[in-house]
Image (cartoon, rainbow, N blue to C red; front, side, top):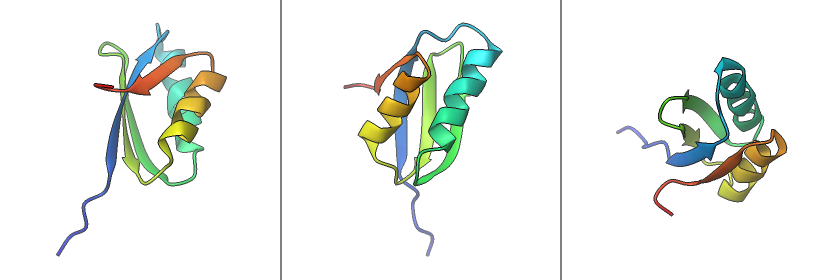
Length: 73
């Protein structure tokens, strides 16, 4: 039996280039509990796998100068 890894979709605004993607990825990877991060520049989204605290993830992105919210919220 496999355990489903929790996944959180975030909408990120303010990204405009590859550097932005790397900054957001790095910020999210540094959050305790994050196992994997995929950032889609064109879609303005980040998919985060792991059981990290959502508010901590949003704060980490904000500290890099971008705006994040849970997708669909």
